Length: 274
Image 1 (cartoon, rainbow, N blue to C red):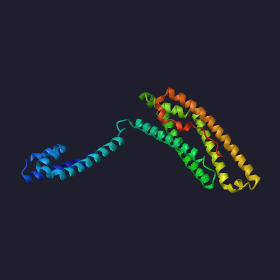
Image 2 (cartoon, rainbow, N blue to C red; image 1 turned 180 degrees about the horizontal axis):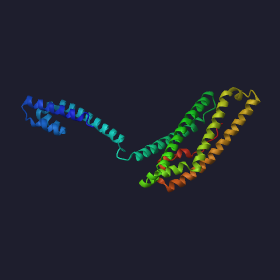
Image 3 (spheres, rainbow, N blue to C red; image 1 turned 180 degrees about the vertical axis):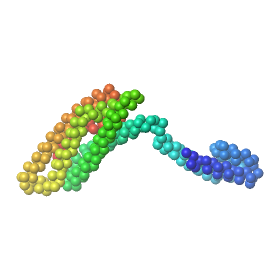
């Protein structure tokens, strides 16, 4: 804090002292500026009358800049140290819960994007883009699962501490993500991605054989991939409905943990790719 403010005020006071010495003004003006820099414009105009407008504009620009910088550094420092007064275990669980919240948001957004890119016309470039995006989505999903695992393990290891401190919201998050409906939802999502990727990869690799109906074998294989993919879609949508029903009921009971749960964008059912 005050990296530039104090040097700036000293410089300002020094300038006023020089001004007072040069124009035979009272030296206490410099002391007044040192203690209250905001009084500088008054002494500028008192010393230079109408000629002080240029100096006033310089003061206004520099004072505003220094104040803005100090406010920014203070805000940054406050954000960095906002949990400094808390015990290490409490700070850790807050970090874990914030991490889970962010990875859940990332997964929500990725699933919306997948739904959008999978609706495009079946062309080679679009097929390849969707396959690549599924790879990216898997990474996002792994990060979300890792966040869940870290929070569950940490809350299990320090159960006595959290009970003693009354941090019930931590266990409410744990209860949600370890529930059978939620676990099956994630497993069905993995199966959906596996089968969708397999269908897209086969379609991409054999694009012209399928498009131009060059062989019945390719069409037969495509049908098999598509049937498995369709089953995976139906299965995921079914488990997703169960997860939504459980989540809605859970939120009625524990509304404070809503930020850490899957958002509304994960409530849409996946539509079949054609």
